[in-house]
Image (cartoon, rainbow, N blue to C red; front, top):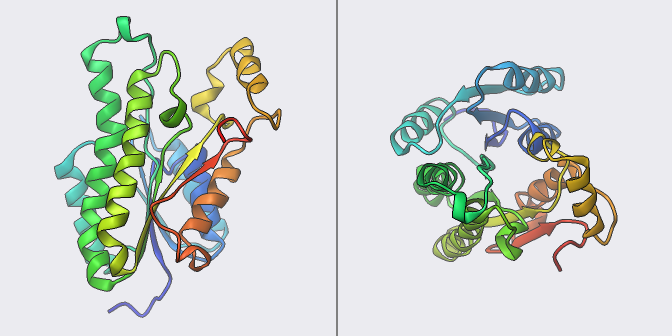
Length: 249
C-alpha cells in the first residue's frame, strides 16, 4: 500500500471552467489529482497542470472519451494500479448541442446523452466496487438547473442533467451503508466557455431571471463540490445542491 495518504481525486472535464476550479479547490488539501478531458488539444489541460504544480500538487491529465465504457475501464484500472485507490470522483464532463426539438437530429441527441449521462454511469461504475471495498469515498455529479426547470432548445441537455439527478439519488441509496456519499451540484448560469458563446442579449435575459442579479463563478460551484466531498458533509447523501443565485428555489 502506498505511504501517501493524500486523497486521490478524479475530475472529468477537469481541464477548464468548473472542472479546473474544482481541481484547484482540491489542491488546497494537496490531493493527488487526475484530470480527464476530451479537448482537441492539451493546451487547457497543461495550463491546469501548471497551476496545480505551482501549488505543489501531484497531478496528471488524460484525454479520454468518457462516453466509451471500454476506454473508461482501461483508464480507471490504470489509475487503481498506480494509486491503489480513488477517494473522490467528480463527474463534470458535459457538452451542449442546442436546438429546438423539431430541429434536433438523432446524432445531437445521442451525443449529449452519451457524454453527459452515460459517462456518469461509466465512471461511477468504474470506481464503485473499490469504494465499497474500502468502505469510503465521495462521488459528486454535476447536473444543471435546466435538469430541474427545463430550457427551450435544450431537450437533450435538460434530459441528460435530469437523468443525472435520478442516477445520483439511486446510487446514493445503494451505497450509503458502505460509507460512500453520492451527491450532485446543479449550477445555474455560470461564467464559463459554455455560456461565453451566448449573445449579450441572451445573457441579459438570463441575468434578469436571477434574483441575485449576477452570473455565478466556477469557483462558486467548486466550493459546493468540495464541501459535499469533505468530512463536514459525511451525513449528506443523495442530495442535489443548487448553486444558482436563486434562479431555482
